[in-house]
Amino acid sequence: MTEFEPVLLANKDKDRSWTIQVYEGSGGYATLRHVLKEKSPEEVRKAVDSARLRGRGGAGFLTALKWSFLPKDHPGPFYMCVNADESEPGTFCNRVQLECDPHQVLEGIILSCYATGVQRAYIYLRYEYHLAFKRLTEAIKEAYDKNFLGRNIRGHDFSLDIYVHRGAGAYICGEETGLLSSLEGRRPYPRSKPPYPTVRGLFGKPTIINNVETLACVRHILERGPEWFRSIGTPPPPDDPQDPGSFGPKIFCLSGHVNRPGVYELPLGIPCGEVIERYGGGVWKGRRVKAVVVGGISTGLLSASELETPLDFSGPIRAGCLGLGTGGVVVLDETFPIVEVMYNGCRFFAHESCGQCTPCREGVPYALEVIERIRRGEGRLVDLDTLSEIGQAIGITPGTTICGLADGAAWVIRTCVSKFREELEDHIRRTNPQGYRRRLPPGTIVLPQGAPAGIVTRKVQTQWTIYPNYQLEMINKPTGN
Image 1 (tube, one colour):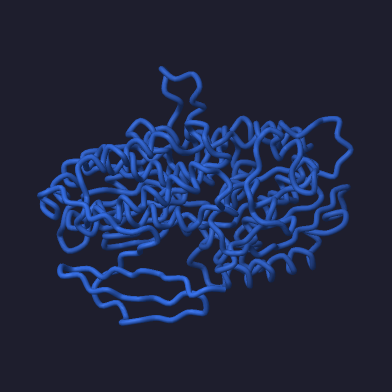
Image 2 (cartoon, helix red, strand yellow):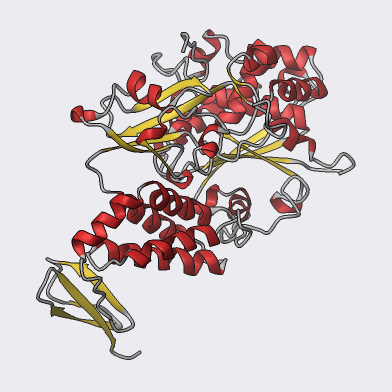
């Protein structure tokens, strides 16, 4: 890969980079001034369309195409919701952007609202991002003070107000319609589509929902031109007319078993192995790669033989993953058990499910139950077939759920079982050579050795029974109302 000039993270290491003085000193808001003076909203939309900008939040949908779905004859108002509810495990690029360069994000939001006729925007921020909240609210105040926000921005016939809404700490709020429900003060249940948010969204009005990184790219497209943006990344493959290509820079979060974890801005299409070796400094402790979570745990895993996979919107799909996702790359070394990957992934999604759809509400906890049995040495080879069946049957991709949360668990299961079946079979044969499975009474929870001798709660008295091997069995006996 040739040398690459970061733009999204160009100000990250500057002193007090989150202030408007530093941002304007590096050319910030100059693009906004120029656009408001020289370009119409239609010209801005055409520039973003020409750049082929795709959403950086996971789905990879064409941004300008989404904007075009706003009804032309609607009296308004239109809303924009900025998805900063970054809850995907292994992902923290939005946090870095909002902590280190919030004005870049604000300029992108203002330009996008100008292009779509929006006069009110909401930034839905993950509640745990305390520093990002502090710096973002300060940046919004600075923007108001300099009339980059508010009424008749910089003397032009364009007004915009931006509000920050802190989320409730639920993964499901990152789904766009769950986000809307939460913003409206209701339980964050995802909604069936259609109607899509661009037709009926926040408060029943047409709404655009874009990711933080996506909107930050808008500023650079308008500043440097669509041709510059398309010069970065990978063009569409000639054998797939439905693929619009993967253009522009992308922020990758690199973590796990690497020597230099961190946030790196790189061109789309860079091979996964190059990210690990060139930027991550290789696998720690001199070990080798076993697997790589390619874009957040919901996208599934690459095996060690697939490290040449390009990290663009189509490369991981060709390698059997759900997609590029959020760009959260997590490296696992050769000593990490795959059964633990499955356990951690399914435990997370079972906990975060809203429970609205039966395949997700019942299927993911059942998969977790099977994985827990395998993990504690009571697995059978047929359990892997059961897990594969669950992984193929739940989620929005086979059309059984409203949102894609179940797909996250499904792709963890799919890729682990299909790519690492030999390891899983070996674990089962070693830990349960006779294929033994102890039948437990309903309501039983198996806990590891060393749990407390007894617990009493308000409604349930817990009785412990010691078993001869390596586990405890906890039997909950109701004590009445």
